[in-house]
View 1 (cartoon, rainbow, N blue to C red):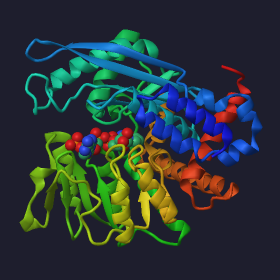
View 2 (view 1 turned 120 degrees about the horizontal axis):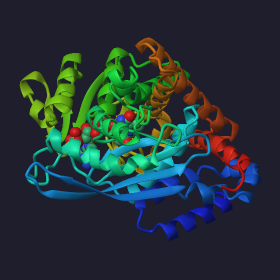
View 3 (view 1 turned 45 degrees about the vertical axis):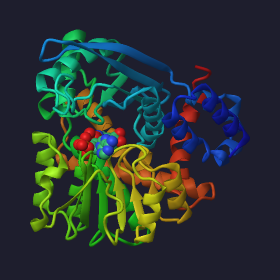
Length: 457
Ligand code: NDP
């Protein structure tokens, strides 16, 4: 690691000692930037790293709301406005009890590099709340009602609206924030700001949403992986794929893999994982989507030995099959550890394309990189979601809607550009085939150059 990066990392560790996820994300990036920092002394002279690890602004606020029993509840809301050098802050909102400053700062930091990689003019941000829509405060184990989710979203936006705007900060969805939540927050923003702008992305089609936005992160992950395979003259036809998660990213990654002729054998959620030796069918995937998005149930409900659907409680997707060609971690951070990586590598895995943010632990990443398999970090391979959010912003500004085919073609083109930029940056600095180094350097350089040009701010 360069001496400069080492000293900045030491200071990040000292200043943010209680933020392990943030330190992990910064460590992963800074350890790979040595070659570009050595070749460009202006970055150190302008304290670019010191500025990049410090959010431009952190907003923390109270979110009071009333549950269905009439009891007043209070959650904590956040927005991290990390870096606006190349465009308005852009990044999702996550509602989950695990949300805290460390998790959101890690996500916001990653977002800066990811957004830069998309080739679109978007800065980086992230936000959310420790609100748990899957656990009603008055009836633990039961989900919050739609009315409770609406009251929470309205209260959350009642504070957030003054900090965001179409040219300032444009939030989107993330874990537990989908079309329903975006709709409620958009409605409240519109009332408070008295304007109709594309201030949130991931909106439904009748009010400014983009076709392909729901599919974009999962599809984009697979498009990125297709580009990695193409470098070796391979395709997904017949490849055995393990996917974790069964939410937005996982389900559309599965859909695209099935369309490309791959065999998808696993999906997972908080209850455990399903394993289907002969491969999940289109019909079963439709059932999963209905279960998760409409009935809002658990994968355990799909267990059916007679139909070949095995369910394993409280495990993830990685150690269930005898042979796995490719793995797609699409659930959450640090969900694939060193043991999982060892298992995958010894059972034939040659490709890991992260759909989630930071799903592989540092130990797992070291093994993938050491084994020289095709491994892509989330900031590169899951950038399709935010890229299509960028396309949604463009359509809102132009007051028009592109067709499904147009958006899909643009998404494909963007994923290829991200792949090629990461590939070329890695090769330029002597790390051919290392997408971690390539993505970090390509994402960093654009933001760093913009910051140098804009002076000390
Ligand atoms: P969803 O909420 O739609 O799905 C998350 C999935 O992960 C669910 O299947 C959930 O299970 C599972 N999960 C969450 N926590 C745990 C846990 N502790 N143990 C086991 N399983 C768990 O979220 P998304 O699909 O939108 O996001 C998934 C990942 O992708 C996140 O890392 C997110 O930051 C990242 N991402 C998402 C983008 C998007 O456009 N949506 C864009 C880029 C990255 P259950 O259903 O039981 O809760």
